[in-house]
Amino acid sequence: MRGPFKYFNSSPEVIRLTVLMYVRFPLSLRQVEDLLHERGIDICHETVRFWWNRFGPMFAAEIRKRRVHRHSYSNWRWHLDEVIVRINGKTHYLWRAVDHEGEVLEVFATKRRNRKAALAFLKRAMKRYGGAKVIVTDRLASYRAAMKVIGNAARQSCGRWLNNRAENSHQPFRRREGAMAKFSYIKTLQKFSSVHASIHNHFNFERHLNRRDTFKQNRSEALAEWRRLAA
Image 1 (spheres, rainbow, N blue to C red):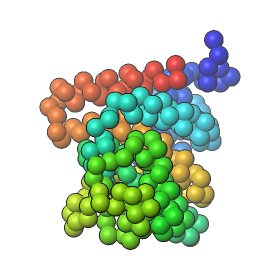
Image 2: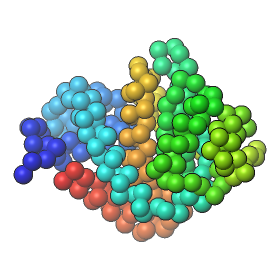
Image 3: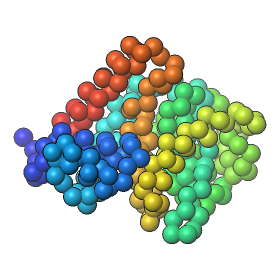
Image 4: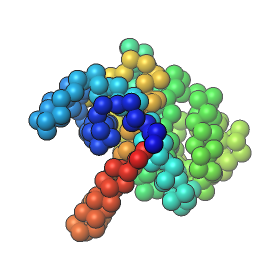
């Protein structure tokens, strides 16, 4: 039986564990190598880099495919926000769309923060999830200009604290970005942020809202589903 792991000497379990450790947790390539060595798994840090580049997008695509049809209620309210990311000393922007529960719907990296970039970001999110009834943003003029082009400017909502959901959603990626010592290319930023968002969604259990028994059950189910990815 042919599969994505056919020509690799390591087992699929080791590859999934390596990708999970590097993408989900704020660890460097060499820290992942050292942690795996303590478990008796001897691989090079460049192997960690190769595996996340090769299998990370594949795992993320499977996660998104399983979750899109499961979360149709995400169209109730979206929160949009953008943050500055430095790449080789130049300013880039990472746009993020989350739903009312903090589920990351879309991430998009651009060189500018103008109407064209905002329009491309909105079209990218709407192509996958459809339109939202309410879109919460900050007061960046690019959002309103892009929504006028689409024809949903009446759905935009702005407020002083209304967009905290989107602003807080950047924090896991910011912690992960620090461990990676920045990015070298915008394509790498787009690729990693998309993979990171999908894996963060998969293991985001909102433990502060659930009882301990419910949290443990959700965590076990998510881990079991992760081990079945690309099986």
